[in-house]
Amino acid sequence: MRDTRVVVLISGNGSNLQALIDAVADGMLPVSIRAVISNRADAYGLGRAADAGIPTHVLDHREFENSCEFCLALKECVNRYTPGLVVLAGFMRILDSKFVTHFAKRLINVHPSLLPKYPGLHTHRRVLEHGDPIHGASVHFVTEDLDAGPVIIQGRVDVGPSDTPDSLQQKVHKLEHAILPTAVRWIAQERLSVVGVRVLLDGQVSPEQGLVAESISTQYSAPVVE
Ligand code: GRF
Image 1 (cartoon, rainbow, N blue to C red):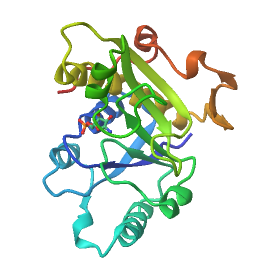
Image 2: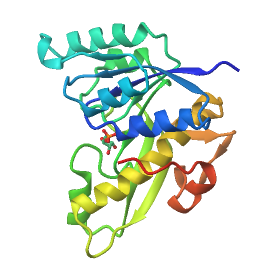
Image 3: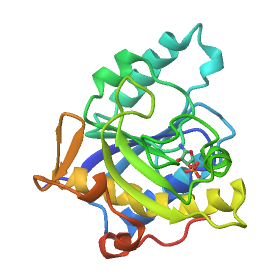
Image 4: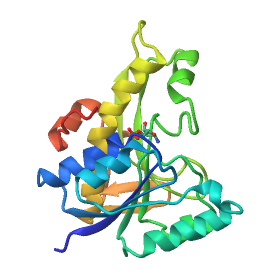
């Protein structure tokens, strides 16, 4: 089986990108990350990609007439690498329907909440405001509706009385670094299928639409990425 060609889109720190890079280096992920594209020239993750010898591009959305033009240029840039999978790993621009349709079923996103709860921004703060006892992260296929595509995998954490948005962000990041490589591996191994809004793993619905945190370590235990 040939390695799946992956393009990763980022906007900032890129710790999820680093988790993917490390998983590939550890032989845990049968993919090859062909390019990293950022909409911000100052994204720290660009350096992570360069350190790993991965080609990088910056497409600054502010230099385009409108979002359509930006998405078109982005599509062309991504397509140069003929990817089997495009990963949004902290990419902070909304992609238009043409982009999403073009990459349908090979476009995934990591989101810091237990979707369908808390799509959009400021998820940690919103969890605390609502007094939720459980929080987490999700990896999902991207559809035209924001953060609403079929969920591939989720990880959960308990919310404690002393938690703050920052402490939750740290806990959730750790989960993301485990569930994102797992989701990418399942896709590379062609183990997923989408039936309606559900994702099947090896033809089965996974419990509660994803894995709970306790079971993540049996799948792939990602090293801690700062
Ligand atoms: C992650 O929390 C991800 O869920 C969200 O943006 C953050 C990116 O973090 N979409 P990093 O850049 O991968 O460190």
